[in-house]
Image (cartoon, rainbow, N blue to C red; front, top):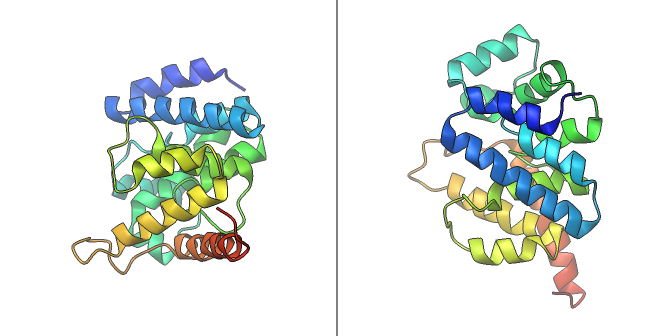
Amino acid sequence: MESMEDIQKKLKKILKPKRYNHTLGVRYTAQAMAMRFGEDMEKAGFAGVLHDCAKYMEDKEILEKCDKHHISCSEAERKMPHLLHAKLGVYYARKKYGISDEQILSAIRWHTTGKPSMTALEKIIFIADYIEPGRKMVPDMEKIRRVSFLDLDEAMYLILKNTLSYLQDERMESKGYIDPYTTDAYEYYKHVHDHVIGNGGR
């Protein structure tokens, strides 16, 4: 497996500057969160660095690469090919950068849509992707950033709630093409949120 620094050097050559800076921000944030929650900082770093390693192609090319490498594509993914950079990223992380750790690969896989019942590392990468310092100040960002270092499940709920609200906006081209995993993830973490509130928490 290559070092994190060597991987970063390679990514700097293929990612646009803004995407590369975002990648560094996710690595930094993910490692800080891993330290806070007692997770493996190295795994968080590798997953953070590689989460967007396939996000430098146009939609058509992403689809072609997925078909070439026999990566399954759902109907939602074919309508929104940008979602496929996570699956293709897993392939590249394994084949191009020598990552064999399934926890790292799974965190890359689920960083865009989320899913129900995620591991701590999966949640950390999903959240870090949303809150890293370079992200624009979307509604409730300050609250989400604060909560992200206190309660991973509550941060998941707040981010997924924001994401669905954004995707369901009447003006959005993607309206009606929301990945089912995102909806399922929201329902799951809303249930966790409601359960805690119902028991007098938060």
